[in-house]
Length: 82
Image (cartoon, rainbow, N blue to C red; front, side, top):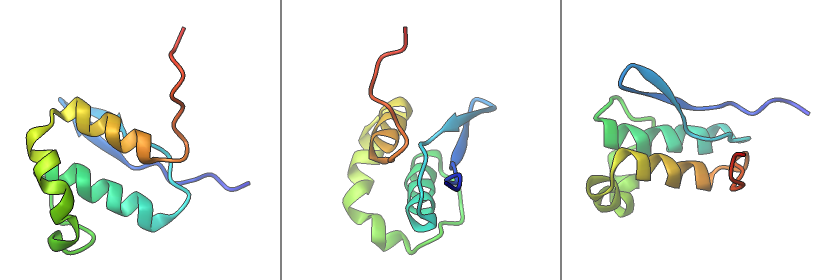
């Protein structure tokens, strides 16, 4: 089984794990949504593709956006760490 690409972002100089995605397009779109929050550029797809997410991203904290993005990935466990 091939490893899935893992999009990452930086917060306060540290990498932020955004989940594991087996499809390149899903990883690229995840990066774009995070880029909207962090103000990064350029986006992989037109900004108009994310009109439905912009209000959420603008009103949510960075931690809320990261948790939401991780929840959308196929490689994220919802189990609590012990």
